[in-house]
Amino acid sequence: MSNKDKTVVVGMSGGVDSSVAAYLLKEQGYNVIGVTMQIWQDESECRLENEGGCCGVTAVEDARRVAGVLGIPYYVMNFKEEFQKNVIDYFVDEYLHGRTPNPCIACNRYVKWESLLTKSLAIGADYIATGHYARIRHLDNGRYAIANSVTAKKDQTYALYGLTQNQLAHTLMPVGDYEKPKVREIAERAGLPVAHKSDSQEICFVPDGDYASFIERDSGIVMPEGNFVTKDGEVLGRHRGITHYTVGQRRGLDLPMGRRVFVTEIRPETNEVVVGEAEDVWSETLKANRLNFMGIGDLPLGEEDHFLAKIRYNHAGTGCRVKRTGEDEITCVFDDPVRAVTPGQALVFYKDDYVAGGGVIVS
Image 1 (cartoon, one colour):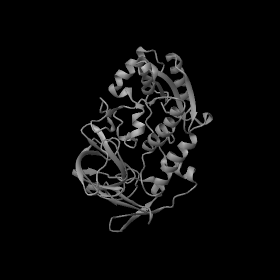
Image 2 (cartoon, rainbow, N blue to C red; image 1 turned 180 degrees about the vertical axis):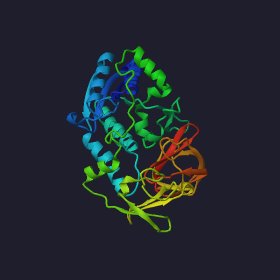
Image 3 (tube, rainbow, N blue to C red; image 1 turned 120 degrees about the horizontal axis):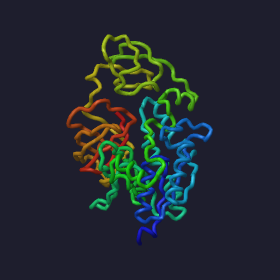
């Protein structure tokens, strides 16, 4: 079957990357349908007019204009219910329990893929596609895996570790073969009106970056003040509520210590924020659960292997030994200590240039 007999639904955020993805796939002969996912803001509430975000009025307007230039069908699909349940509710609950979540990972897994792919396949599409800076490889072992894009600076593989084999088998990521300046050049050459649109940086539903206030508004829960303490329990002062803090944080502590101190642990059960010295933020081990194996089918209980692991989105990666220590648990021992291991964030481990698997950091 040639490309012209295959249909691709492209998730169009109104930005340059997804717009170029749609253009490239049309050039490759696919039947392309553009879709923007309404996932958060109502049109009257849009707060990201010129910030390149993926949720509001500008996203729909820009995506529709691009679809017009490309001559492809374009639709807006409502995924607000799915987004509220799988992203916002998850985000809020994690913070209330002293963890620091990555909502983009949840959005990718349960909204941008699970919900969009299900609807796309139901209308007869063969694939969905996005503008992520990543590539999909079909490995010699028969499994699909997310592989690094050609540009480390924009690489987005970390946020995609949760995708399933079925999702990967029905996904195309054409932008992963290009660096960002080339993507903008392609957009300009194709006459796309978003060629020089700026990238979004913040979490789309918290554009001002004030997570604690958002959590209070959404949940109706006012987090109580509590104690800043040392790891031995010595009280150092009062904090504003645990949702204001994350492991590794230095700014905004307002403690008269006379030196730089850092958050080393959050204890929701006692409403304490533990503070320590710079060296206390470094760790050699961690545990993770909620596992998803991607490039490797499994890591049997008791077995271990060596990987390159990332503990946050902008982490360059550190060598480590990953051992299966429970039905839904792995223990990671790093070759060199890593800074600010943060419960709630993802551990993603790589073999060569592809994602082998990942999980959520517990401790």
